Length: 109
Image (cartoon, rainbow, N blue to C red; front, side, top):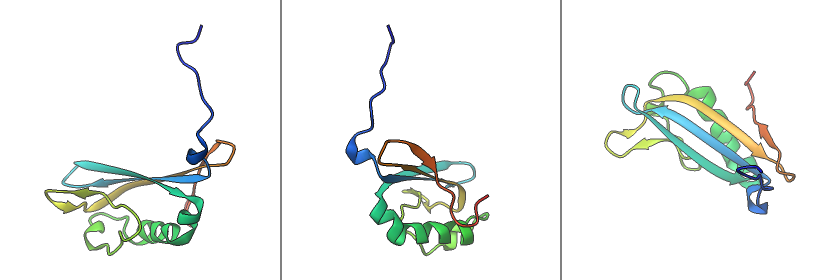
């Protein structure tokens, strides 16, 4: 007898993108945000902001000058403000059958 069972993903958890952003808030104090977007939302303005974030603001202390955040959730520290450096950006897609796919933005290897 198994100690757990696996269930098929709920319909609302399918055909969606999950975006996880990890950023440095204050010298190795990391803040993580995870947002879920429908395919329609993601393929609209979200993917463009994520590409811009990755290509233009992924270096050390570049988040300090980042004007983005209208559509994506950039990690924020209530005491110090926005994080200063992007540590990682991970995107996964859950298809209509419940399979999970890694998403590589333009320029990713």
